[in-house]
Image 1 (tube, one colour):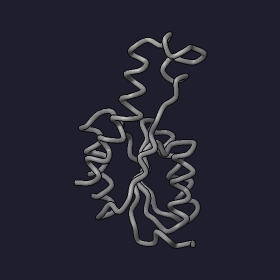
Image 2: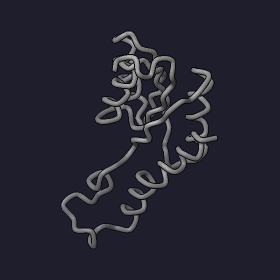
Image 3: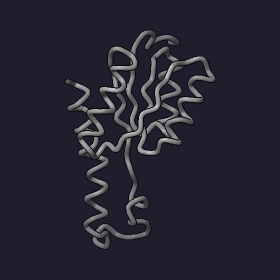
Image 4: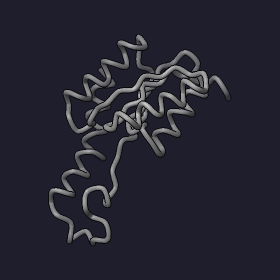
Length: 134
């Protein structure tokens, strides 16, 4: 199935490491131009370097998916660079240990930790989809 995304443009959030990075590399191997988005600029740049080294085409974008303005700018940057947006993998997400919930039961979590997780894992996906569908 190599080349299944030939000529397409994909935007992948949380692509600076882990599943997002693996997805970005796979999308590129399938022929897509990839907008690599992550809150951490260094991780996004590393993923782009890996894609470029393998002969793909990618763009690093730094954005926080919980901020509507940054999400809009992220989508705009992808479209400006590649002329279109065909698909997206809204992968950015965080786990309990990243918001201070490691080793704690749900009832022990501070409300701020829960709010941050929901902001990234739920609202962030919605904000991305809303901007991408426009």
